[in-house]
Each structure stands twice: as structure tokens, then as C-alpha cells.
Image 1 (tube, rainbow, N blue to C red):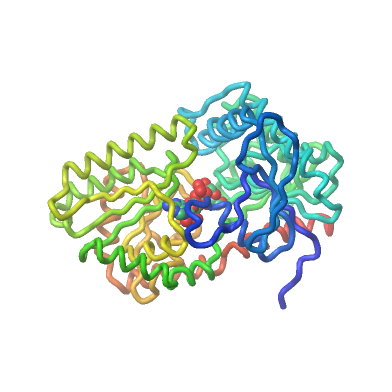
Image 2: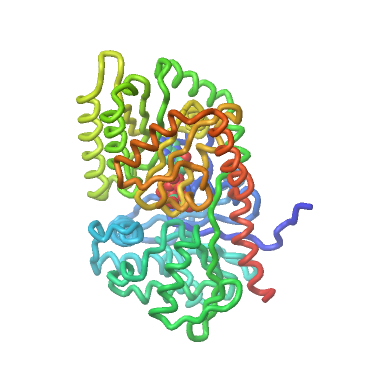
Length: 465
Ligand code: ADQ
């Protein structure tokens, strides 16, 4: 029997993006997953409105849309520069994705990060009732739990990290790294996508903080004990399967069929981000075309990559790099009636995306590092069970721990990518079905509701302990 949750759930994340339906464009993975979780569990989603004002007021904007109540607050321009563009996206994001070369360490960023976390705490505290479960999301808000505790909040507090947790030696290059990790000990439950990220966190806690480990993921430092768990996020599988056979999806699939003129479609769908391994993917595809001249006019590669974080310089650089690379590959191999790479900088609605996935013979999901990667799971969910496509998946995506029946590749190696593309294109239908079936079982079993329950069950168990 369905168990009704007794407590309310307060979700706090940097951005609040309730579902917008078809045509909603490029919602991130986090937004898609949390909207689905909140539809089942009553409560509230709090975060930044995405707007800036001259002076911070803490004025709340409350709304109810598509079954989800949201409360948002505006920030100041320098908050945006230092907290969001600064510490979150120029310091923590690259560092946690193992890109020390792109990581910027600036004191102003750190100050802005702390200030915004305090502002979030001041604004959200009055909305929280004593029995509420509070679930904070992602690297933008690591210190928030500590700030909520400082304001007297005794609630059960959880934190989930959507990106990888870096190895200890990398994290040590962050000024005040210990302060950041200590802040996690204000929560009761801390979740990571995979055992790998969890182990890196435990390594830091035990080797640099003298933490002791107990049963069920208990980690004690001084007088604080938290539970650190692995909790891989899933997708809203049921609705994605439905989206894949919707009118909108069929229309999109039909358009793809017409445009590829009998060729096998390879597809990539990613936010335009250097962690997603797009230049490496283009090079792998180029290698495939070089090595297999007989395949040249038999494939068509569609890369969809809507721009993100366009006010951060490294994102403009990746965009320019990809424009150059796709131009080079197309210049080298294109024929009168064939363009090897179609590279589209646009977001699409879920049904259209699902239709594109379903029309594809191969998906290239090859990030250099990714907390999970929901596109891999969406691709699996969208397939026709009788004639499924093949997933080529980076071993450095969290999803590779669950989708072991994908063709697992090292995204840094153009030869390995070229080989995997060829294997995927040649794969007999029975093998495609067998691999897809096993992956689909996981995508169905460990969906977004499973993920939410696994986390909130751990959080609810805190008082019972
Ligand atoms: P992201 O880095 O945003 O998420 P991902 O997990 O792949 O990455 O999610 C992307 C989402 O955006 C997917 O739902 C996808 O359908 C959608 N999307 C991508 N391109 C799109 C397009 N052109 N049009 C429309 N929609 C598009 C972060 C972490 C991940 C982690 C998630 C969830 O970086 O590792 O899986 O959070 O925890």
C-alpha cells in the first residue's frame, strides 16, 4: 500500500524550476528530477528566482504551478557574480569535475558564496515548521545547513550532491577546504550518486578530519554524527516512456527519419559544458570517419547542446572550440547531400527529445566526468523495445555504475570512441535487445521516486534512531 508521508518536504536549491510542460526547453537534470519528486510529496521548493535587484530585500515570491509550490528570492548583481558565476561555477564546478586547470580561487568569490548562503538561510527559516524535512541540493549550498543550525533550526536536514566528489588530493588545493567539508557535518544525511564519490568523501573525512566510520554509513567527527549514503538519481521513467510514444515524439522521430535519408542516426544531447566531453566526442567521430570511409555516407551525427552559463568565459571558449571542430569535420568530409555533424545550440521539450532519442541508432554520452548523467537514462527509457538503439557511455559518468550493459568507453580516447561507434552500428538486434532490457530494468527499478524515497527514508529515520 502507498505510504503517505507525514512531514512536509522543503527542498532548497540554487534555482527553482517547476515543470513547464512540452516546449519548456532546456531544464537541467536537477529541475526535472525535483519537480517529479515534489509532485508526490507535499511541500515547498525554495531558491533563487534567477533575477537580480539593486539591494537584497529578502522579499519572497510564492507561486503554485503544475502541483508544486515554489518560493523564490532575488539576489544582488554582485551575489550573482561572486556566488553563482564565481565560487559555484568558476571554483567548485571545475574543481569537483577534476579540472584544476580551469579552477579559479578568489577571495571575493568565497565571501559572496558565504553571504548568499546566509541570505538564503535568513529568508527560508520563517517558512520552515518544526516537523518539516529539509533537503538541500548541490554545491551552491554546502554551507546552508550550518547557517540554518546557527539560526536555531533543529529539523532533520539532508544534503545531496549532484556532481562528483573529488579525490582528497584535488580537494586540498581549495583554500579553506576543511571549512567546506566541516559544513557538511551540520546535516543529518549527506548523499552522493555513487559509491565512488562517497568513498572519496569518506577518504577525506577519515584521513584529514580523523572521522570514525560506523554502521549504515555513519560518520563521526567530534560530537557530530551524520549518515553518508550513495543514492543514485533516476529519471521519471514512466512519464518519459509515455513521452517517447506521444504525438510530439512521433512527429520528431518522423522529422529525423526524413532528414537522415536512410542513414543511421547518432545522437548527443548535453548542456554545453566542458565536463560533457564534446570536443573529445567530435574527435572520436572524426576518427571513425577517417578509419571507416565505407561508413561515411551511412551515418549522420546530431549533437544538441543548448548554451549554458554564458557569462562564464570558459563556456564561451568551449562554444568557440566546438564551432571550430564541427566546421573542420564538416569541411573535411561533407558531400553535396550529406553533412557529417549537425550541431544545434538549442533546447527542446521532453517529447521532442524523446522522439529524437527513439529515432537514434546510437547515443553518445561521453562526459569526461559527470555526477550521474540523466540523458543516458532518458535514452534507454525512450527506446522501442523491439528495435532499441545502443548507448555508448563514458566510464566516468556516474550512470556507468548502473548501466553496465552500455558500451562503456574512455572518452579521452578517439580510437576507443571510433571503435565503439562501429560496434554499436554493427550490433545485431538480439544483442541490442538483451543489453537494452537489462539497462531498462535498472531505469525502471531505480527511478526518480526510488531515489527520493531512498533519501527521504534515510532522513526520516534520523529521529527514529
Ligand atoms: P546536468 O549537468 O544538467 O545535471 P544531466 O544529468 O545530463 O546533466 O541532465 C541534463 C538534463 O537536461 C536532462 O534531463 C536532459 O534531457 C536535459 N537537456 C539536455 N539538453 C537538452 C536540450 N537540448 N533540450 C532539452 N533538454 C535538454 C547535473 C549533474 C548530473 C546529474 C544531474 C542530476 O551534472 O551529473 O545527473 O545534475 O543529478
